[in-house]
Length: 181
Image 1 (cartoon, helix red, strand yellow):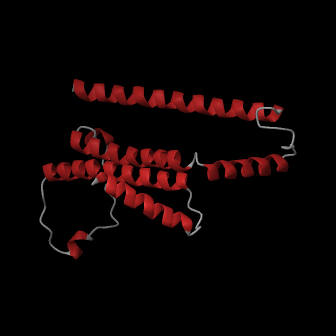
Image 2 (tube, rainbow, N blue to C red):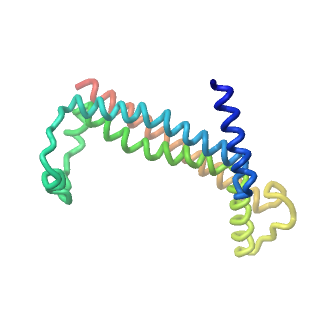
Image 3 (cartoon, one colour):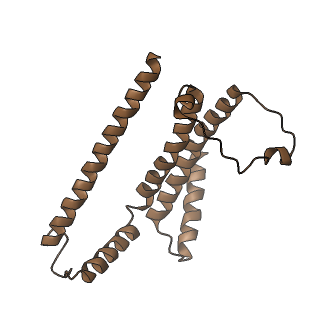
């Protein structure tokens, strides 16, 4: 059965590519991998949210007016209060960092494709022309300003890793402080 489905999808893909709409094999597989990750990622996340919300208690639905009452009212709760509730703290932190993780996954799928590198090259040549550098002398590694750009990117990467380490140490310290209470 699996072989038949794979054959059928391959045939559909060939028909799609034969129309010449600019869909390449790499882009198609990246899109299918992203869709698979979405399915396999959203099911456990939705299950977690459903279980978490059911543990907090089910409130009966009254009406749309009740649902939208005080819609623009923002409740401010001190961190010392919501961090003492493990369900609330986990839910807020999960919501906060899932968005960042999804952005990185999306960039990982489409930021390293052939089209993206073409756009990066166009942006690089456009910027270097505007500041007076010639890009016709060779590759980025061969030029002196290319070396400076690589140093900049490595420093930026090092700063990002150090900020990640600081954040991890702070969250571990906060978790240890919550456990000691």
